[in-house]
Image (cartoon, rainbow, N blue to C red; front, side, top):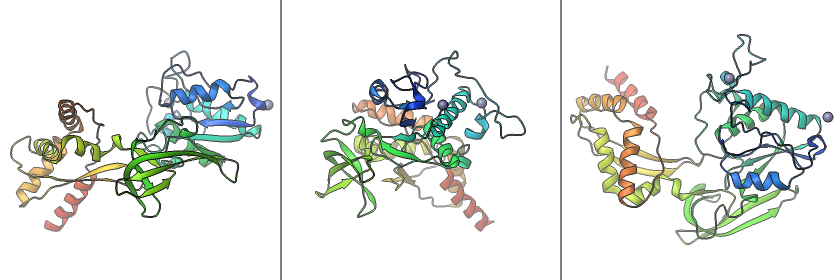
Length: 337
Ligand SMILES: [Zn+2]
Ligand SMILES: [Zn+2]
């Protein structure tokens, strides 16, 4: 689950008559506790979101999947395997939305601030994808909206900044999506705007002063502090290369000088490419062994954390994707065999 704070369980709006509501909120990011409180305190809308916090609520409970002939629980459909927090929340959530749909309520789903409409996945990809990639939606929300899309439920996509106008205050350093150049550009927030579009929907946008001096208007901003570029800015290139070299040379039999290239993918994922030159096939095989066995997220994050601490900064945790390396290695092995 995204949260386990003091969230009410599928609270049905202040009116207490959920079936009479015009609007039903079907998905909300658990990380915005303040926004949730603001929404549920004054609304007469209904709320389908289910946040289970204790075993008494049903946390840890499992429910059989009605569409699975092997009688597995719903976890298998949405996570690919049984999870300790269970799948009861999902059953409850789906029943809530069904009820809202039956009563012809307009459905609304809330995305992370600055990321409206992003990060959705397809139902069939749920069990295999990393849902906590921080793009657009929380992990459970990706499950919710994949289900909504599969069921054909229409819903309005709402930016959390509509409730949290201070999500990116003026002067905040951000990566802003530039539609003209189709890339993320580093800059600072100059202005936040909230307007109602022609469909009567609230729409938020930001004016960002790019580091290049240009001003752009955008619907999409991401926190620059949560980026690989920031790790590079805080540590400096020599220190970062030193850490990566150490992690790649732990056994002492591989001497490589990695190059790094931070970027933000169009999806919004911040990545850092690590490029390594190897001079002979022996080194490549040694490197393969190191990458497979010893190049571990936990060690890298520990070193980054310590180096950041010495500089008075806390750095975001990184994940390592070794697939590109393994694919290249496999191609090379096939070529040379
Ligand atoms: Zn009814
Ligand atoms: Zn389950």
